[in-house]
Length: 150
Image 1 (spheres, one colour):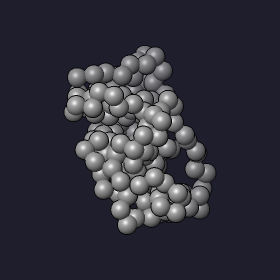
Image 2: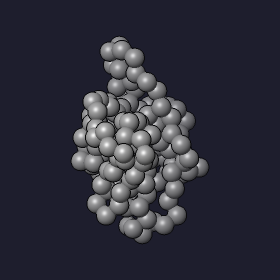
Image 3: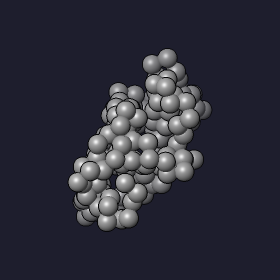
Image 4: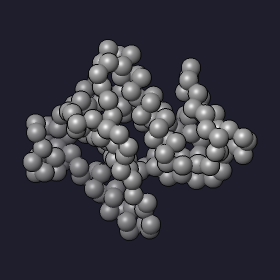
């Protein structure tokens, strides 16, 4: 999946010689991404990269969670509540965007926004997984050749 900043604003750092140097906001995004494992026991995080204006990541969703009437996922002081307990990528991304936005705003950046929605792709087999992993890992190296603003 890919999540972009609103207007593709460069908020998360810059790429220098193929390596992303994260800004304070970029570090917050990385930390919120990794904390998904605390809040969602039914996912595994695979390769990911935070770039100046977006995040690429692979999330493996597995198993079932509580079959109660509502799914309540703690986010420290906040709760995400839905009527459907089915595991979905949308719920994970909604949590991530909300938590990272709140943390960024609380850090003194009240104008930060994510682009509405996100891009997703279902990985169908090991070959495709391998190719997407390579794409994510090489993305910082390819940043300049893709004619990005630095």
